[in-house]
Image 1 (spheres, one colour):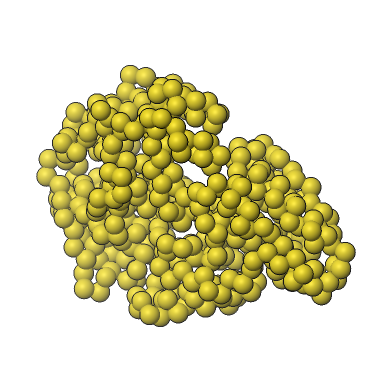
Image 2 (cartoon, one colour; image 1 turned 90 degrees about the horizontal axis):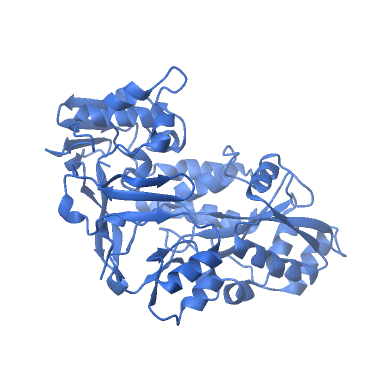
Length: 467
């Protein structure tokens, strides 16, 4: 990447990324006074892992690939207000320039995203085909970049992957280990056991109940960070009665929030009280009125024409154990107000297929915004045109307008006001029933050091070492 976040020392020997940026492949960069032009100086001596020098043309190709190619990178470029290749220019061999369509308060949060990696244009063009202009097939099984690692001698798809040090990396002193072996172990119980036995140094994605078991485990450390993870129940407004705000409000009043924190998260999290999660700028929890109130829920259901409740279903993906546990407590809470819920435990494929076919009335989901920005978050979750991420099919012209006004507003006070207005409307309409913010937790052996946390919650392996 041309730039990345500056880090600072965090608790328990960790590194925590800050909002400030530093040059990586760009030795330095400048931003014009109007905030629209970013100029990057390519780091002298930086090469790809095959030895090819990195130049401004490499930057230009990679950003064009991001803009014109498929996938999330194109969406990021759009959010940067880059719509045309003419906005991307190699001024000379060592100078690359981006010209935004407008000043962008999110730019410094979007530019470090890993989807905007710099790639070798020569190899990419050699591996391209008429049906695969950007060599996506090649990069699915090959690593060719500028980072600290290369593809190792062990590379078994779906099983294990060895990352070995890149001998041509421009900053070798940064790498604190001789390689990292990544193992895919689907069972969380197996990951737990292997970690306890010392056969794994780090374990990711452990359910909270496993983390709770590790609190007093010998030789194990839990690195716990507050997170902007948002977990919620989606109420499909295309399916009655969830198009009625009173029904949605009733459900919000019926849920046992404190019980979820205690019996599902085992304390590894906190209640989620705004669609702009705590830890995000402008987050405002003061307008979220919902706490467990059975009588209030029953009154709202009666007003909506359901004095005796109704029947529906709640879908969860079986791969997310905490969602299944959460569903049981939701089922119990809704039963107390007369809503009878059948829990549907679906395979990942079936869950996504039925979700995409608009067949699920209620389902448990989560979201994590790589960019720590309130309008980035609300754009994906609430903007009516985002049919693939606005899973409730929520459509409120007032919310759409506030998001549009706030996205590129560079006045902090105005942006805060617009965000809080949108949050207040969400609290009233409650298209998503907010549940909790789960902590970001990495479990590991206590001889491991160099754990880091970045805005995208992807661990940087280069800093890891063990005694």
